[in-house]
Structure formats: structure tokens, C-alpha cells
Amino acid sequence: MTITVWGTDGQSSVENIPVANEAQRLDVFNRVTYLQSLIGQERHRLGR
Image: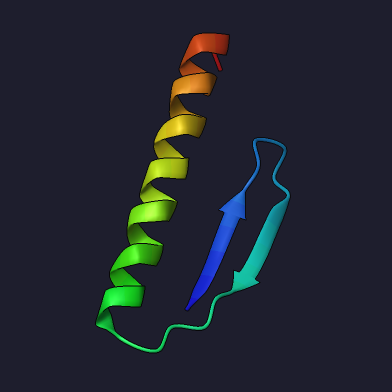
């Protein structure tokens, strides 16, 4: 699975994450969703 994170300045970071089964895939999606929510909360707090 490939995860891409975009910064507010247009830069990005790409990570390849090995996933062996459905449970691992769901775990990765849950972790990414959680991190996205933290980033969104901080951007809202900072008014961006």
C-alpha cells in the first residue's frame, strides 16, 4: 500500500507500507484516518 501525505506548502512524502492481509490493510487505513483528523484539528485551531 502506498500512502502519500501532502503538506500545505505543496510538498509531499510517499511511504510504501507492506500489507499482508485484510486486517493489516484496515489497520493502516484506521491509523491514517486518525492522523488526518489530528492534522485537520490542528489546522483548524491555527486558522489555516
